[in-house]
Length: 166
Image 1 (spheres, one colour):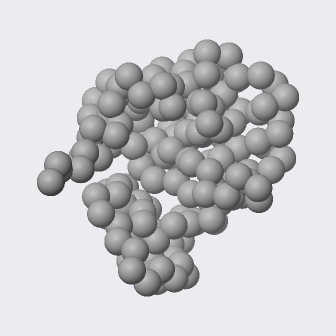
Image 2 (cartoon, helix red, strand yellow; image 1 turned 30 degrees about the horizontal axis):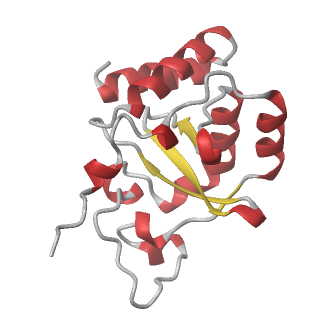
Image 3 (cartoon, rainbow, N blue to C red; image 1 turned 45 degrees about the vertical axis):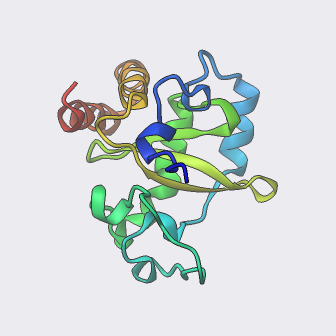
């Protein structure tokens, strides 16, 4: 039996689904800004019950990136998610298939994927240091933060630079 691909194989740098759109259309950004809603996934939590997320019977997390374990994202931080989503959209961090990214105040990059396209529900998880998308997200975000962002956005860019060793 052939071994299934590892998570690293799925996050190859040439995966066009994980590329930033060169210039996201303002209509797309506006639509996402108005519609995207976060809904956490147990697959990206070490302790989903602490986040109020039920575990689906028979489902496994496999090798998923875990918000609470890998990025120290605590249940208390969930209240910041809407602002993080808006930050990423203002910075134009959008990819094919309506993928979105953002940068947390602590420098972590998070990727958001549609969970339910019909209701614009997204789940997210941290981007790890070895993933090629991290450098592209950082570059666009830091340029945006320097030009249009607030002091807090610029600090997040600097924290990202340090965290990911750019």
